[in-house]
Length: 225
Image (cartoon, rainbow, N blue to C red; front, top):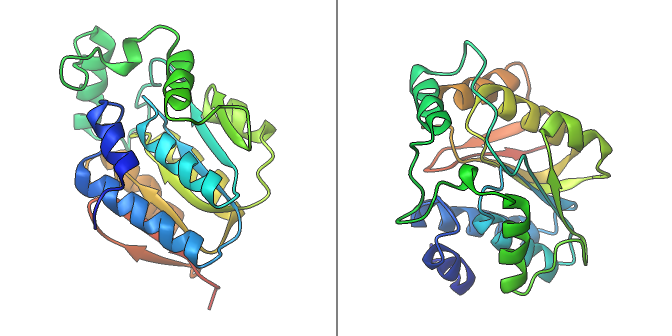
């Protein structure tokens, strides 16, 4: 799998923490979902600097779909669940202390003032205007903003929000809207214990999914048996 030119530019601009392998898998999976004419919008939970969101939104525009990106656009909420791993909690302590490093020489994104405006500017620099042609960024805690967003159906969801509570909410609010043939992809399944716990728990007793392991774990929706 090769990166698109847009994804290459996003990585060169230091707008994403995704590795080349993860980014290529993300793009390829979304292309396949769209090619299969799976119905619905595209969503991302955990926008950060906006790199992957720009690429997802670009594919959404090309396919005549809408895109919804959700983020607090500031300091991320803490890993408050007992199901979050010690590694996650140690990571948050570093972030909270102000000592977290960004990409290369850049400041960590959670320390950037007016991050929402910065991300909107990045979208614009790539020829995508937030608030136009179905491209939306929603600022706030997921549980505060998602209920007010009109998403009738989804075909692809990227969940990149690290910790148990956030992943659990993102998954439980998006899976019921996901069309058969759609996909939810998780950036942190193999790196944050809370993310893995939230995903594994959600699918216990269900028969409407197929797991797809890889650098960024994915779950495809199928018709229940």
